[in-house]
Length: 117
Length: 116
Image (tube, rainbow over all chains, first blue to last red; front, side):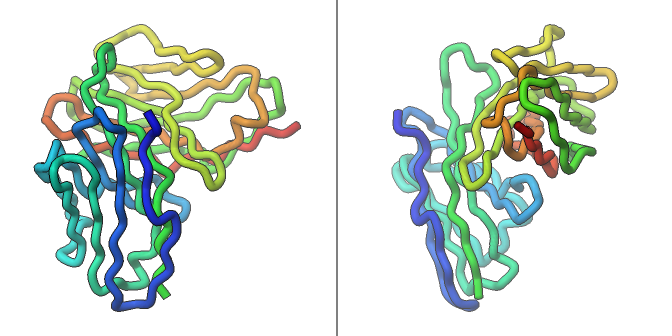
């Protein structure tokens, strides 16, 4: 169990460019989540996958954002035509059926910090 | 919609002392889970402790314990024997257990500084 990993850890881009982030969940976890965290705030939910199906999307996820989880393993989050307001930490988390844990605890990755110039 | 409120933006505590972080939440649900996460500076968020709402017994994990008051919708975190490594942002989070939605709703966090 190597934990949740995210790539890249930092991304600087110019306004209007497209960016893509990757998340690799804990291997036995079937649920994967994306959150966005801005400075001084708690994380805000963006979207959630169970296996390869995207089951829930927040109203924060505008049509410039798209997430995929092909084959139910890693996930990608793409932001098209980036805006300065997209600057934030993008966190990925995973969870899954674990014996004895009824709370479906989410385990977080280190995040990808996006800066839009 | 659920809301989570952490009313203490910053707190400090002397090493080896005890500190309590406050969290209140608003929900109409009866079946839910509550969490405290810790986010050290420039490091990833890790779970500190979790509580199932149907359990009356307060959760405990080593030096960390909670005071869960369901009727008051309060979920405070007590850290005993504070250590320098406890310096971090602490986030309280809520999950509705009954609706098939697994999203966490977070508070704005409390920045805890442990002073040597």
